[in-house]
Amino acid sequence: MRSTFKVLFYVNGSKEKNGIVPVMGRVTINGSVAQFSCKQTIAKELWDAKGNRAKGKSREARDINLALDNIKAQIIRHYQRLSDREAFVTAEMVCNAFQGLGTEYETLLGAFDKDNESFKKRIGIDRAKGSYQVRVRSRNHLAAFIRKCYRRSDISMLELTPDFIKEYEIYLSTDAGLHNASVWSNCMWLKTIVAKAHYNGLTPRNPFAVLRGYKGADHR
Image 1 (cartoon, helix red, strand yellow):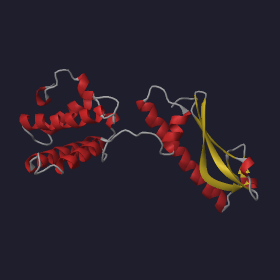
Image 2 (cartoon, one colour; image 1 turned 180 degrees about the horizontal axis):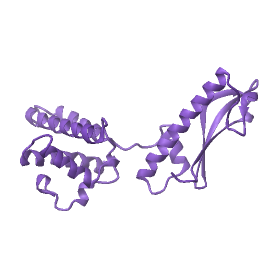
Image 3 (cartoon, rainbow, N blue to C red; image 1 turned 180 degrees about the vertical axis):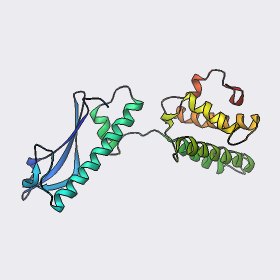
């Protein structure tokens, strides 16, 4: 993590009411600053301005400090995630992510599920049930690959790389035991989902685009 990234807490004395003050947070990154409410209040005399924490070991102090520790941990995770995908991260971007503001990129299986659901609604109109079942199997192969190789239930579109695609292709032909035609078909479904997400602005890049001449099972 960058050495200029800092999270600290303070109380807003101007909002004091009957000796109770709100606890605020401040994120600083490379000179950019953003403030946010911690949605916590504390008796003014219990606040340690130097330590940026509640004083003592009372139940109130412990609860406040635990809440602040959790907030800081969340902010650090958001900062790390943004740093992984953005060339330049500001304090406002981190605070917005923490508060649930702004656009979040799609997850891979989430995109697949949405596309399959849309496909399902068209069965009997201009889509066949058999084609839908093939798409569901393809989605399930992808989910199994993510569980086995990433030990997670889903991944962000931002984590997709050419290596991910190659590893998935190998998984399909080895662990899943599929023949070349089926490997190609499953990779093409994945390519379609990623291309749609990229076109709709749900992911900033399409890793298939850098695999020139990608032929699914024939690509090595």
